[in-house]
Image (cartoon, rainbow, N blue to C red; front, side, top):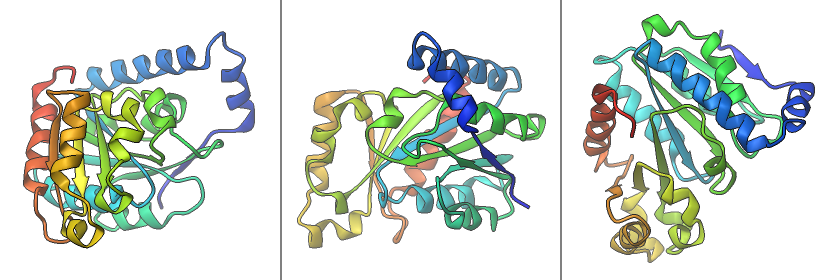
Length: 231
């Protein structure tokens, strides 16, 4: 049975009573990171809008990683279990994170999920954040790297419209490239917009349907996992 972690209204209220909500979250994120580092576990935070393809991308990455690494997946979804069930069907330990606010995960919730996870048996945790290109950027979770997934189906201006999200990213995945022509979106333009914001940002075009770019994404995340350095 997949465990579900849910923040109670009282806990959310308690955090809001802190001098600064963001400072309170940052403190909890640092505690999460310290716990992960202590056990030699890498966590990677996947952010992106609803429909960008985060779940499918993570599912494909699990297929590539599960014979190489001990994996766990935390899935953020306020209302349904469809995504988490898809990933759990691959036999990977999975925790559902149900938020009260519904627009982002926070470090408090991730900390609870870590308590439900045997970190001695895990090398890599893939965290699927809530589908949103605004709020998650403000709330670090304790991950070693942050991946932003943007789809060509979201139009040609998504990077320009949400610069803060991309400035905080370590890797940008431009997804659903097989639909670029029909959508009238140029992948090169999205990549250019990302590099205009952050010149050294790694950008990988992908198609989960055809498999294009997935090996490059997997290699980039494996490098983070094996490096043990802050991304």
